Structure formats: structure tokens, C-alpha cells
Amino acid sequence: MEDVLTENPPPSRFFQEDLNNFASPPPEPPLPSPFILFSSPKPELPLKPSLLIIALSSPSLHIFHSCLPSKTLIGTLIIPELPFSGNTVEPSLQDKSCNIYSLSDNNNENSVLLISVQLPVSPERSNLVSRLLIGQDIVPERVIILDSIQSRNFRGRLSPDEALAAKLETSSEKKAAATSRMNLDYFPSGSVIDGLSASLLSRCQLKNIRGTLVVSWPEFDPSVVRFVGGLLKSIVPGLDNKSVGKDLEMYSSRSGLKKDAWLDSDLYT
Image 1 (spheres, rainbow, N blue to C red):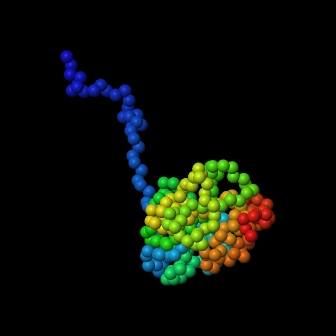
Image 2: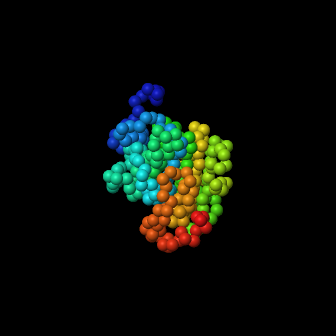
Image 3: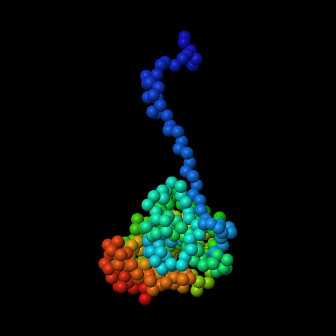
């Protein structure tokens, strides 16, 4: 009787190149990690601002580019897989970039930093990016994150003609004096915040940093631009609140809204 265990196997019905089709593809090399490139001369690290503002929403980005001409560029977040093609030499609202600005003297104990996030950050990279922006080279006392409400994550109906703003806070922020906190309703239960803004707020909670996430709706609306400008007026040094309304004609035409839609807003007085 033949020994089926030691006998050579019968020839395969497939050619060798056909067998390769069933093999697992070779693993792709890991993506290089994001990093922060600081301007020269490199500031003393870690930076310890009293306030860090992270702008992700279109209204907040519009405000900081239009109403803070005196801001100083001190660094840029680099995500290696995102190309630089199409970006201008001078920072622009149309660039795909993530720049770090100083709004005051870094040696001042009341220094303020602004991070303008104008590039897409994938969910897989959100944790890496949030660790870079909070807790390593930048260790702020307080963080304010400005983002937009995504209709797919909101429990309930969102009207395109009705502006809405809400907040989420870390436990450290809730313990702070009421006069120093954002006077907004909390984000409704059952709705979800995801992506980079959620990761940044979680990072604040993990590091026991005062953190507030302010979300607004609609994503493109001059009334929200005015509202965010009024909200930040008392906490951002050098914010020219009178110029918030400038270029709103271009802003509203880009979003498909009426030219004077913001005049009917009851959010800003």
C-alpha cells in the first residue's frame, strides 16, 4: 500500500504564475509620520501658550485670514502624503496647508497661537495629528476648536436657512469659572462629532487641558461668519471685528446664498 503521507504530491493543475494570483500581496511600506516644521530661528520648545485656537470650519478660517493681518507664521504641519502643488508662496485661504501662527509675543504669559487647518486629515491620521498639535511641541493651557456640524452625524433636521451653534467641553473646562467659558448650549445628545475635531478634544481630555469644541451650522453661511467673529471678539487679541463683514459678498456667492442673508440673522447683535 502506498504511503500517502510521504509520497510526492501530484503535479498542480495550475501554472506557477497562476498560483501567484492566490498569494497575499506584499505589504505596502508604512506612510511617513506627520511632523511640524518650525520657522527659523526655531522657537524654544515646547511652546506654552495660554490659548490655542484651532480653526477647521470655513467661517473660522475666513475670519482669521481676513481679520488678523498682524499674525506671525511660526510653523507648518507637514503630512507627507498630501502634495504641495497649487499652494501659493504667501499663506492663502485657498491653500491646502496647516499653518501655525502667533497672535502675540511668545514670551508673553498671555500668548495666543492659532492653527489654520486647511487640508483634509483622514480618520487614520487624526490621532497622530492631534498628538502633534497638542501635548508635544505645543502645550497650551486652554484650547478652542472651531468646526462645522456635519448633517450626516446630527440627530434631527438641520434647516439650511437657520444658523445653529453648540459646544462640547472637557471636564477641566467645565470646572473653570463660568465667566471664562463659552456661553453656548451643549451639543445635543444622540448627535456625533468625529474626525480631527473629536480627536483634538479627546487629546485635551487625556492631557487634562481646558478644551472647548464649538461647532456651527450651516457650513457655508455669512451669518455664521458674523456669529463666530462676535464669539471670538473678547478672547482673540487684535481681531478686527469691523472687518468681519468684508468680502461677505464673495463668500455668500461662493456658497450660493443671497448677498444680504446675514442681515437677517438673530445670532449676531
